[in-house]
Image (cartoon, rainbow, N blue to C red; front, side, top):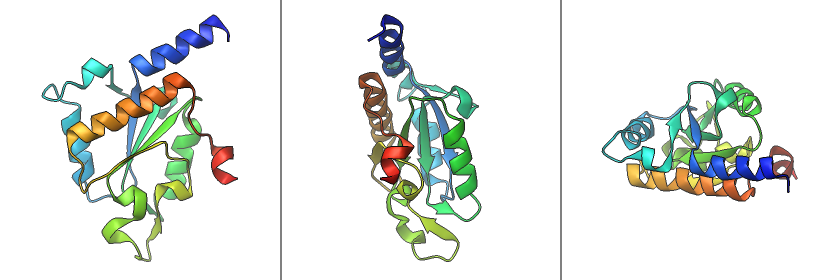
Length: 154
């Protein structure tokens, strides 16, 4: 492996940049994501930085089920992220639709549209669990074992 690529893999594992996207959640998970990035939970020890643009992020943090309005935005943001990238689904809604399942405005789980690398369970999950999920995704990036869109569609 090229030494530069090896260095990039190590740095992705040590300082993951995240982009958060609410695809139709009740906002409970978003509050917990925001709490997990405060000094109380010390996300900086993992090197986590919240990025304002998906073009600069390594990890996409998704909360909520995919709705009619957010499906195209989800796909667009996922495509904008550079490879390698990882996806963390926060809460029960992106995994199954939770209480919103069966609604006519809900498509369903996030993994129907993009590959999900890490699921963080809970409604809403605790900040420690969210940080553990982000750390797991950073480890996946460092190891070079992330899923890609073509594998997910097979």
